[in-house]
Length: 321
Image (cartoon, rainbow, N blue to C red; front, side, top):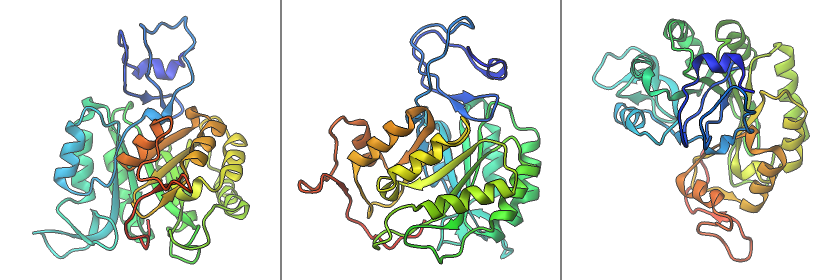
């Protein structure tokens, strides 16, 4: 049965619909129906792996293309402190990925533009790259979200713990991030991750990683939907602990498996097994296009190594995300 909160915002279509809508608990629910929806039918479990992403929309052009692209469901962008090209030298939250600290679009303009096209019904994921960038954005986010349409999913993301290959790297202050999201942005899905670096022998999420993350969430009394952002290369090596994490969490808890560096080696067989164990109704896939197509293919291993049966993309592995 479709929940009443969903009914108020859910658009009904006849035939196949390929978009997702905001559920009453703040999660994206599936809209892969093949017939007219009625309140008397039980909705099938959503396949969240069908949600599509525009990753790293950190310029005016990228944002505009994502808004106009009918195949995109979620728009992801990064926030750092820096300056807007052609503007003053005042430091403010801008859309850029480290080490860049200049952009042609500020966070304020990004939100104004993205939310202006609310009839497009695309979700927004904001990835904060530092404590300072997040702290400087709080008042702006409050103003922007105050009148946002209810059916626009908002995700707020930060790496708040050290993780595989980068356990000593600086991350966003977990208590500031979580307490602020809980008190000021209860409508948002909280997306939390670990700092990572590919190319070391430290190649998986450990039980200790999971324990520290769940403990800090409990400490901050987080009750809104949470998605754990995990790097595909390491998630594939961490099937047991990640399956236990999701199976032991509330139904509104999900994984978001991401891959943005072509230097990563992803064991596609293990990744598929992880998703099968967890369930497609609990996993989002924010992957590079070739990695995503490889996942969707029954036997796909793009640029695969014959001996290892792993997805192998040859670019610089020394990239911190």
